[in-house]
Length: 253
Image (cartoon, rainbow, N blue to C red; front, side, top):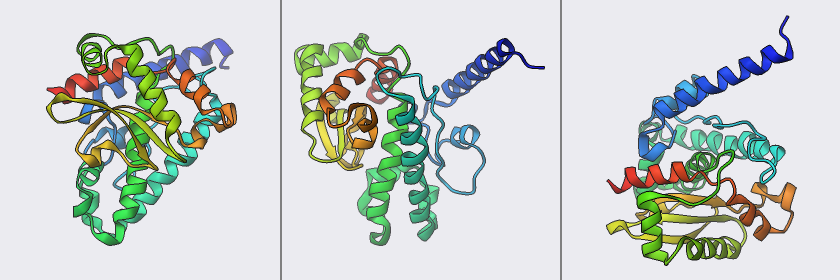
């Protein structure tokens, strides 16, 4: 008979094994677990005949409490992100050779995607890519400030971390309707803070996303209702600066 103590121990062991697997495979494109280009996708998300699959969260639904509630995380990941993956696979099935490319390849060169599925790839592929990054950009007991090269680059481009944080928050608040706010790495190592509408990504504009915040209402409405500014302020407490710093170092090199 499994006691509560045994169950907790088993859960902790499984979580540790998952974290080790995630770390081992989280190298492609600065740690993004996506699509056919990364075999870890099938290892972690389960075998599938579709070229793209839903990556699991790297933590429990309630790990980001009290800043992001468990119900929002469950719906956001299991419903919204899953729908983007399903619709992306549906679009790719119309042009099967697209399934041989990574989602990064597709989004970097949308003009090369056949017109009949281009909008679907842009929207649903962007949703899959953005969210797969987003989950990794947060962690339990996150927050604080970046360190090392990224911290120096932020100071150099924005004056200070505080100034960066203010600009990022202002950009996120001002996104009209649904979209994202990003810290992105551009040519020449330039850092920018920029918004994108809907599920667009800086990747499609020649820049690499380093940190992104989802400001679609489904990301915060259950807890914050129309108080987007409160959500943004709270979100900084769960930012995974370790992931962002490692991604910056990987992409910069």
